Image 1 (cartoon, rainbow over the protein chains, first blue to last red):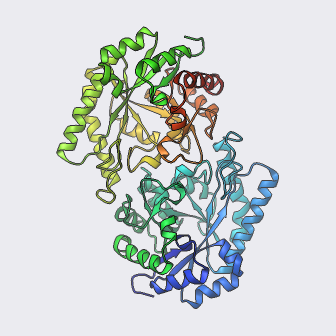
Image 2 (image 1 turned 135 degrees about the horizontal axis):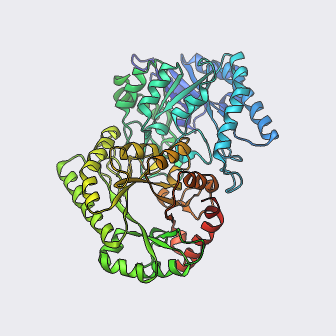
Image 3 (image 1 turned 135 degrees about the vertical axis):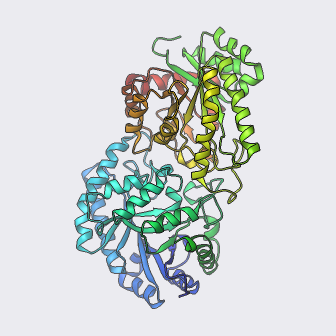
Length: 290
Length: 290
């Protein structure tokens, strides 16, 4: 591990085409202290083996992506969501992280693979209420496993198809009924940089002990063909990392800083090169302000 | 004019390829009461002639799009913005509408034609402060001409390149120092439907006498190649027009309801057909809830 990179973490979504071992090797070679995993990697190897691959390289698991998709309106959909998230909680505990990132889901019928059919159920207010209900179902299970549900506000452009949770303030309102050790929030620059309430919401998250992660990547324009993949290396776009990192630090956050970039051009680059770039950008644009 | 369509208006952005006369004819033929214009049309004909074309067809001008682009950081940029908006105010008064929609501009260097260069000035907090300064410059001029500056919150996906004004609540905060007859807000479903604070912000806008327009179009997925043009006819996408229209009505709004759709496929359709579709969708999805 390189001095100054202890808190720097590579989310494997940034090197999507790499195997777990390749991603771990690239992260370790770049000198970072941690790696953020996705569930399919844990499922592929089993939690114990995945954990060993990470720990053998001298890394920590900063978080597991992702549980969630909680907006189903049918009894069957609710049951499936609770069961799948129980598995996600077990996987997080098994792979050695407390932080399980939740993408709460879009309008009913949405999935990670596709948007819901237009016009079937447009009631975003009711969908948000069901997210609160499912958190009440799942928080005791997470607490039992010593895992934290980490609510991720997604950019409002994903409100229909991926997450009806759209701002950090809304995430804090959803988290409010629960112990901060059981339900937290992640600050992801890509999703929240535009928010006029951002400074106040980050400060509130700090006061309430809820900041469970800081994820970084830049906002690129023009949009890629898939808007979901229109993210860039820190420093290549429009986000003010100086200011947001300072707000996060002032809120008392001392945890890992994960770079998570979805970008087809970056996926095509050798993972070792990408990890080096991630570490360099973190060192230049973020670390001085933490 | 058809009974029930008195408040229904066609924004000419929906029929972008039509001449002013063609757009006016299509709007009148569909039985609507009003039309929303763009500045280039007023400039092409002169305000007096443009006004006559509209009034001869028995229509009102519901609003003029658009002034704004207020975030310049240089003395020259500030001077240009104030001068251009003075012309926009004169054009609104000349063409016979009080409502001049403002798109406030993105990070410095943004323009309607292109995003700013990445990484030149990422300070969105400072850009927002300059918008407030320019409103203080322009509000007295608008008041002199009996024109209202109508602040339009744009979807947060346009925060870097088009509008650092991202929520209705933020628009109301910006408007707060000014007389509601001089600075108002427009509720545009495409831009604000996702906002967890929407019901509260619409109610506040009503209480404060600031609702100067209600613009409608739907949220389509997947995104079009240009995200700006990914809008649909009311009812084709994910927006809950029943609920939002009820909130707008409960807030006391009794003005025009403009359909503004940017969509290349819709632009390719005959304007008369598009106007009929707009009127039919308004009648089906919006009017019953107003």
